[in-house]
Length: 140
Ligand SMILES: [Zn+2]
Image (cartoon, rainbow, N blue to C red; front, side, top):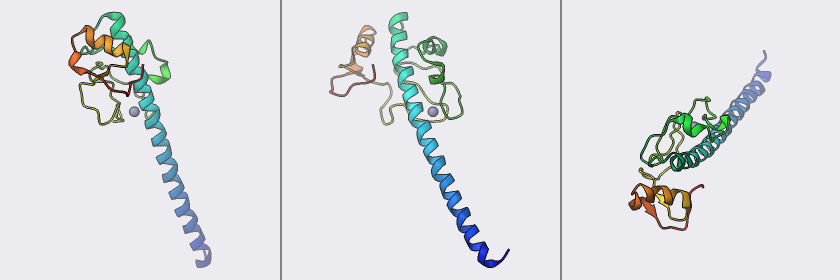
């Protein structure tokens, strides 16, 4: 290989590595967004499950009971396809890959007074101190 042809090949390799890194970052970002969306669906299902089965928001729900409300594709983190673990409404779901559900929010999770389902569940089990009167609402 001559020295003249070597430089463009190295340049091409650098461009390919940068493109691969960019693409990989986009895939990770997409997985994280889909994972958060899955956890929102699971969280909403957990609230419904608690209300139907008369369980408190502090009880850890059997994941299979919650999963029956959710499409099979939403039961796993898109990164690695590992299923989520059982969780309580107060703690919220946790991703096996470390994606954050409601990042920055303290546990136990509060219930927005605007969310009738959550407010009802929290009131029924005496967690009225965790009901927050604000304009923002959680997924129903
Ligand atoms: Zn995840």
